[in-house]
Length: 280
Length: 116
Image (cartoon, rainbow over all chains, first blue to last red; front, side):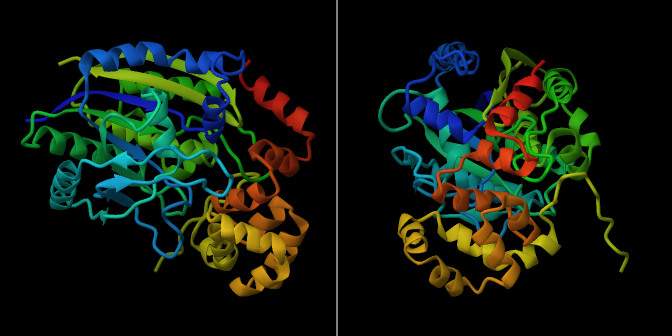
């Protein structure tokens, strides 16, 4: 059966893409963030995952308001990205692991997660940048991928508790996949930030730090909050912590944090990076 | 059916069913800016491009003003509006400064202060 080797959660701010493209990793503004990654690269070299399941949120590249699935799973042989309207650099397409995609879709629907399957799916910066941070080499991303997208564009947005349960179900499905693949689960987004309204620029460092600690000590901690309360505590886009929560929940039992970085600001965002490894 | 309880957070518009319906045409136009050809068409003839999407008067005025708070009030969703802002080379810090009535440097300082 397939094995989850760990979970990596990271912010996905578009400006990271510009920093990579401009080779700014060692600039004082960027260094504390990019310094989180060499130890993770060494870990990836050691554990050698074959597949990445990436839990992310689309920002209006693939999904419009005409059809807005709460949860969707990519089942494409290949995933393309685009300039998203800002002329940002695009990356080579990503290769899908369709066998795992369909296994997840079958298992999750069977467990009453009525998700949307996507045989064509454009992936945006929330998907591409974390993969580029983890596998920075030139050319195409070296491992296969399965995108899992959670709606954070339009209310109603699924609750923290529901996203946690989705993560648990994804974890169980991966562990029941008849394959010897090694799977890493990536959660992208956050942490606290708000782009819109008079409250733009809102950041909540104490809450972020408590949330990060909770992923190790008490992973269901954030499920006590409604999505509206999460907006209040973390900003309208801070609710992207839902992706971190789902990714963490794929690991049954305790974890240790092999990497834990918090740095702000990156653009308008408090950025975090964690590498969580199962203890069992 | 019981009235859905609406949550109020100062300086924040939750993009809910009301906003999603109100802003549909505006957001649809902004979504189209994912394609460069559409951005170019907008730049070439703004009025004609807006007309294709049937924006209402408030949305038209908001687009003309380039004012983000006004665009949000007209039903705009920030993720789609970001693509509109991209046409003018504005990043999220420009937008943040505009919405909070600060200079961009002041807005950046506010973010830095949040780390203290």
